[in-house]
Amino acid sequence: MEATTTAAGGERPRRGHELELKIDSLAQGGRGIARTGTGFVIFVAGGLPGDRVRARIGKSKKSHAEATAVELLEAGAERIPDTCT
Image (tube, rainbow, N blue to C red; front, side, top):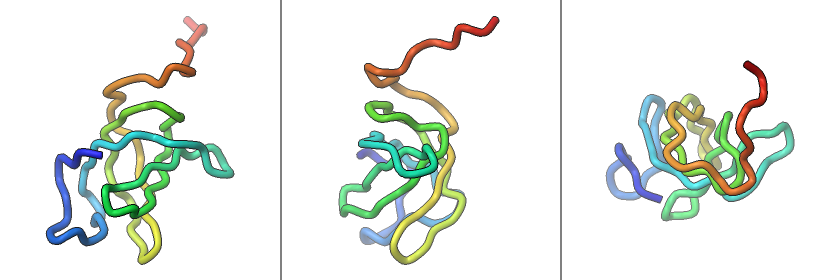
């Protein structure tokens, strides 16, 4: 996982930081699960497995963080285009 903005010294990301993340799987409730290089878990709203996204941290807790996908950098293989027009 590459970070566009990271916390110094491997600390957990703080509110407002933006990270480039690869979504590994889905959590209960439909949020994507990503991990930083140190294994810190980030739940990403709007991310699907296989996606590479730029996400902005909203809440950061001791055990995990919550983020929102602000840009889809690379779509996962299972993502299908919207059919609504």
